[in-house]
Structure formats: structure tokens, C-alpha cells
Image (cartoon, rainbow, N blue to C red; front, side):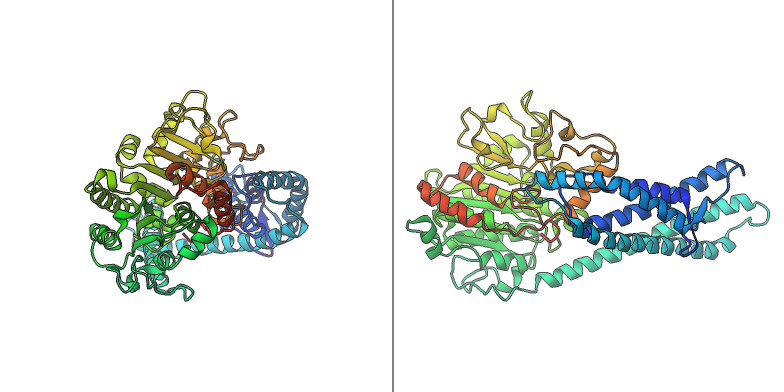
Length: 557
């Protein structure tokens, strides 16, 4: 078995060479800037993984050479370190330029010397951790091999066959152990998330208004709302705050929310939500929003608060929670939950709304961000069904694996870019990546409007499995967004890996970049749902209020 590294003595030259290449690739520009500690940690992991790959490749070549090449290409540690230092010095100007080009694209200041000092420290930590894991895996493999080998038949008569069988059995055993480990990890994450879901923030107290779920008058118990639901029903602008911002008389907004701890199935939760809409008098409001939540049950406060300000509180909001884990974990562990729960809610609310008098019922709109957008899409067969079943939609940061979104992107008008398409001259569906972008097209926009919000540097929108092996259309010169660094190029496997890293680490970006859409959602909601008759000064005040919001974390939510 390959011995990856002998600390304090010698290092494998082939492994170090491939590790340095992996380090250089980890520094190339991606969609979003990373914090210095994150970049350093990722580069350390990349070096260690590259080192292991290099060692395995050399050993494979050496065996194929039938003794013409040595099994190891070791050199003293100081030689490898010296080569690495020279390579790092030569690479530094390029790395600085690459990283600063990404920071410039999102309006962040250039990196400095201290950033790189922090990066070096975390590079060492990342490399050490990866080597430790590698040694642990190799040690586990050897122990399993020693345990299985003596029990394999034919060791004396057919040693080669027995050796191959031992190796195969050991690999299978390792996979079983890994599978069990992932299952245990999944269970632990689910339990921890459920416990966190029941740990309410003391800043949010039980509402007393009958217009809120979780209140004493509500059909939904306060204890069942969950952490995200509590913040939704106990948050938002008050009537006084709405009147102060809009300068006109206001109503108290209705907020209906059903947490995952409520008894019953997704269909039961949806029926409970409809009962809450009836109880609160949502049928008498001017606008009703069905909101798709993210993995933890979260809704962007900037979007839902802005929606209520636009309509001076004459609105109703309804949403359900399906899991308590963040969106990335939820998408991996319970991939159908967002679709099933949101579809049940949309079907139930739409059926209830359809039975209301056509001339005296609220405008029905849907909203979703990230996994919430994915869930909203799942409730409709196609874009035509979405347009026919609602009176508007705002869908932000839609994941790349959403079928309807992909169909619309592929069906765009000839000559329009993939990063910001035009479809049927914008008659029904429009895309935007900046304030005012939805109004940019000269043609008329029908009364039923669908607005897609997607920043050119949002990894959730653009990174999918196919990026591993083929250059994505959104990176072609005539298709790419101006929000993407000119220095970013597609590299097989590397670009996809960097996109995942961007999702995990790059949360400290300005509000109008990456996966943050709070400000832009206000513009889209205004274009799609209108307002309560606000004048230009009032609209400007609403925008000023919402621009102060900065709440989104794709990992936590």
C-alpha cells in the first residue's frame, strides 16, 4: 500500500509536483471571492489531494515499467519545500491578479498582505488535516486487509488470485464502512438540526395578533413553528412602521406558517395552512403570496418585508417548513422534501383560492429563493401551467437542476445570452440581474408576469454536474455575464469544485452579488405585483429600508 508521506524525512517528488499543480489550480478565479482563511484552507486540501494522486500515479507507472522505474521518487523535505517556495513566488503575481479580478467584479476592495498571511496559516492547517485523513484511511485499509487476507481461500495455491480477491474484498469493506459512516453522519445532522429548530431566539416572542400563526387564536401551536417560522410570524414591519415608511394608512399583514413539527403529512400541513388563511381573513386582502421556503424553513426578510411595505400591509403570506437542515444538506439528504411539501401547499391554496369569487379575491402570486424556488417550480407541469395558475411569480437564485428553468433557458430568443435570456421579447417571462433590469426590454409585459432573478456569479444557478466534464454555455464569451471575472476560464473538474467552494465559503459578499437577492427581489415584486398606490418618494423610502437588510447565508438557510 502507498505510504503517502513520511513526515520529517522525505517527500515523494511526483506527489509534490502534482500537489503544486493542484495548489495553482485552486488559486485560479471562480465566480465569487473567498475569505482569506477559506482560500488558504481549500488550497491546503487541494495540495494534499494532488500529492496523493501524484504518488498513486507514479506508483502505477512504476509497476507498469516492470522495474525500469523505482517504486518511489523520494527527495529530502527541504528540497521539495524549496521547489514549492520558488513556485509560489512565481505564481503570486498571477494569484493576486486572479483573486482581485473576482473581488472587483462584486465591488469588493483588493486583497492585501495580511490576507495572504492568514491564507498561508490555513493552508498549513488544510494540508495537515488532509494528510491526517489520508493516513487514517490508509491505516484502516491495511488493518482490514490484514483481517480479511488470512480468511481468503487459495492463499497458498493461487496467491495472485487470492491477493486480488483480498484487495477487492477490502475495498468493498471500506465502502460499507464509509456508507455506514455517512448514514450515521446524516442521522446526527438531522437530530442536531431538529434540536436547533426547537431552540427559539428569545428576541422573537409569541405574537398576540390573531393575524399571525402561533398566536393564542391560531390553529398552529407556537411550539410547532420551528426556529425559522418563529422569526417569520413574530417579525416583519408593524402597522406603525408601514405607515411611517409609506406615508399612507396601513393594515396589519397576515402571516401564515406551518412548521414541520405540526402533526400529520405534508397534505395535512397544507390543509392546516388553508384553514389559517380562512381564519385570518386572507380572502379579503389585495394580494396573497405563496412562498417556497429554503431547507431550514427560512424566507428572506428583505423580500417578504418589502412585499408588505409595497402593499401597505394589505397582503397575506403563506408558507410551510419541510426540513430543519440548511438547503445544501436538505437537497442531499431529503431531495424530494422541498418538492412534495411545496406542491402540497400550492395545490391546496390554489384550490381554495379558485373557489373564491373571481372578481373579489386577492391577486395570487408565488415567490421562492434557492431551494424555495425549486419547490415552487415542482408544483407546476411547465411554464404555461405556472402562468395559467397564478397571477405572477418572482423566482430568485433558481438552482441549476430545476427542469422548467432549464427549458426556458434553452428556448430563449436567438441572440440573447444564456446568462440573461430574452424569451418571446419578454411578453411573459423576464430575467434580471440588477435593479431596473426587468423594465429594460422595450416590448409590453403581460399582466401575468414571471420574473427570474439570477446574478451572473451565483454558483447555485450555474454550477451543475455537467460542469465537471464540459464547458458550460454560460462561460462562453458571447454568453457570459459581465458579473463574471474575465480571467475565469473553464477547467475540467476544477471549475465545478470551485463552484461548490464558492457556495460554502463565499457568504461575505455585497447584497447584490452571488446568492443574495433581497434588494433585487423588491424591484421584482414591485414589477410583478404592483403596489398600494405609493408615490415615488414612498417607493424610494421602501427601497432605502430594504437596502439595509443583509441576512442571507446559503449554508445555514
